[in-house]
Amino acid sequence: MTEVTTPTGLDELWPLLRRHTQARIGLGRSGSALPTRHRLGLQSAHAAARDAVHSPFEPDTVTAGLPGMPTVRVRSAAGDRLTYLQRPDLGRRLDPVDRAHLPTGDWDVVFVVADGLSSRAVHEHAAAVVRATAARLTGWSVAPVVLAEQARVALGDDIASAMGTPMTVVLIGERPGMSAADSLGAYLTYRPVPGVTTDADRNCLSNIRPPRGLAYEAAAGKLAGLMGRGRELGRTGVELKDESDHGEVTGRIL
Image 1 (tube, rainbow, N blue to C red):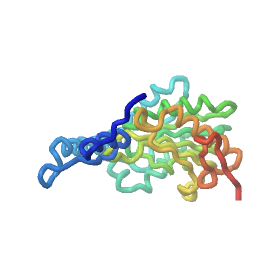
Image 2 (cartoon, helix red, strand yellow):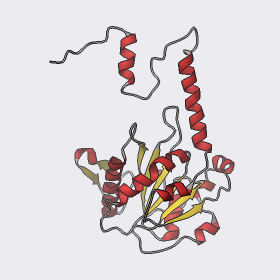
Image 3 (cartoon, rainbow, N blue to C red):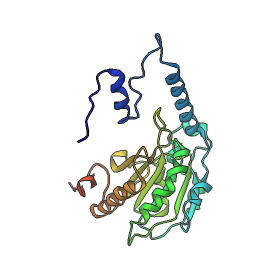
Image 4 (cartoon, rainbow, N blue to C red):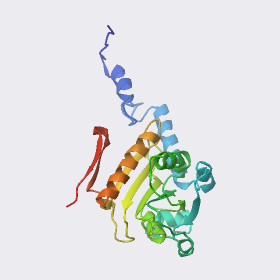
C-alpha cells in the first residue's frame, strides 16, 4: 500500500498546488518584492506575450501543415498591425479587393485560420486542428481553407457571406496572457450575418495548445460534434451546448 504524505507547512504545500495550475501562486517575498527568479519569470512571460501579439503572420507555415487541402489568402480592412490593434472594427471586415477574389461554391463549411492576437498559436496549432476536424466530417463538403491576416473572429462572418457557406469555423490566436502566449481558439458560427451576428451566436473552444491545454484530437472531437448538431438544429451559440464529456452534444430550439 502506497503511503500518502500530508504536507506539514506552506513550504511543502505550494509545490504540490503548483502541479495543478499555471497560475503563479505562493511565490514568496524578498523584502517587499518578489524573489528575483520569479520577477525574471514574469518579465520573460510578458516579453513572450508581446512577441506573440506583434509577430507577423506566416501563411506559408500554415499551408505547409495542410497537404492536399487548397488554401486562399485574404486580409482584413486593417492595413497594418498598428491599425489592427487600434481599430478592432476594421479587423472584422474584409479588404474589398480580397473579398472580390474569394471563391464561391456549394460547400457546407469553411475553415478560417486567422492570426488574431497570437500568430505563434496559429503557426503551432491551427493546421493540426483543421486536419483532425476535417477527418471527422464524413459527407461534408469543405471549402478551401482561408488564411486571414489582421483578423478578428467576426471576419469569418464576412468570409462565409462572400463564399456562400452556411457554417464557418474560425481558428484564431487568442489574447496572450502571463501563463500562455500560444493559446488557440476555435469559433463556430451557423449562418452568420456580417454586422448582425454576435458572440451569443457562436460556440467557442479555447486554450487549444497541447500538452498544457486542450489536445488536438479532443478539440476536433468536440468541434465536429458541435458542427453536426449545429447543422441539425440550424443554429449555434447559446442554444447549442457541448456535453461531449458526458457522451453527447445537446441543443434545443425555442
